[in-house]
Image 1 (cartoon, rainbow, N blue to C red):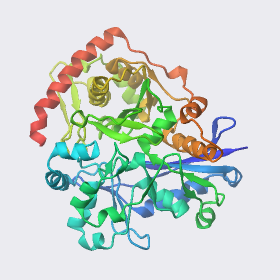
Image 2: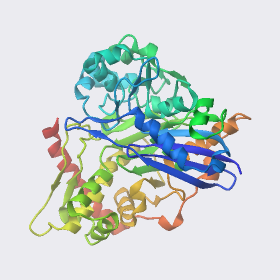
Image 3: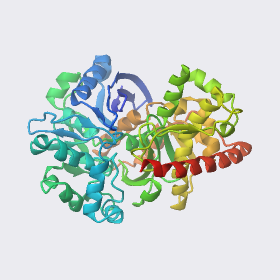
Image 4: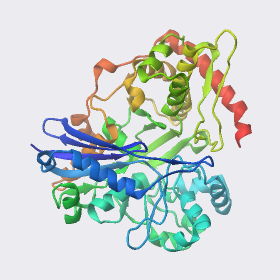
Length: 494
């Protein structure tokens, strides 16, 4: 038996899968929940010791016999999080996460010093947003000066796991492009932005490596700690969206991937650097050989979880209730900015349920509106893709939302595109495993990642959802009302 392993470090949990690449199946998987520090000022943080524990728990649950077959490992991690370490590798502060919105002031400082939004976009291909890493570094300098003075290593969550496995301090292009310190077009650190934050920053950043290159090899220390073979390759890895792209086969033109988890993301492969920051489309690099323009919303299943809690329903009950309501929920709208929002850029945004009347206020309409709102938020991203010349044929759907038949149909109707779901779940972890296999094969000659994904990424035909013309028409009207409401409310949150 020949296997590779994929690790996915998400906001809510860490998962590890062992993938038999000859039989093309996941033979074992394990997970560990992650805690979250959440404050009313927008703070969202985690601790390195939670990541350490996650590795121990996940690998500890896997059988020794299966672990012994692992030939390479690939790591996926939540994007943008800032892991600050001292010279001894000890955390200087908590990890500020992608959903942390406490850095609005730092974004303003960097943007003004750079010469405004256009200058930032010219330097990075992206706007300076609270979710990105750069303002988190400036936040540490302004609010924890002693910690900043001792700063030696700057890592993202997936880089931290790579470092724990190999002892090597490197970063690949994909996750780097989500730091707001990286020139995505030219694939190098931006000295201009780094110097605005601190003149020592550029010298602290890790060595950049190609996505096809290994980050290193599993150290003897890591092998002993996790029960895995010493000396096996650890691939470059990448951000969860980049690995999700590999895990869904979004490594060539023709379709998009939409992830419906805690956050919502919509992204597609491009063979050239493109972005549309004004319409929420970030200019990221892929963790393969191209670019990955991406829209991210900070509230996807967040909205449905809130409504479930409000009505004390489980997931199946929410779906059943939503199925009773018509497309457009009779005018009921959920504006899902429970964590602030990134697309549109409203870090101080607030959620609301609106459009209520004496005739339409019921559980079914509110339940369905919570499902619809997540997809409405990404419809704008689809419009931006089309303006850039994309002609998507279908959407690959992953995340918790992909498990819901009613949500899959809502997505097909709102986006007016066929929805397809990968046969194997855990797309980001699987993407890590497939990237590890790519890295492994590249040691014996160049391997084509698109061909590799075609061989290993299969679809579950039983979960297909195709747009229904009558529903598409109804949702075009509902989306126009949603857009009007967001436009009306946005000035209140700026």
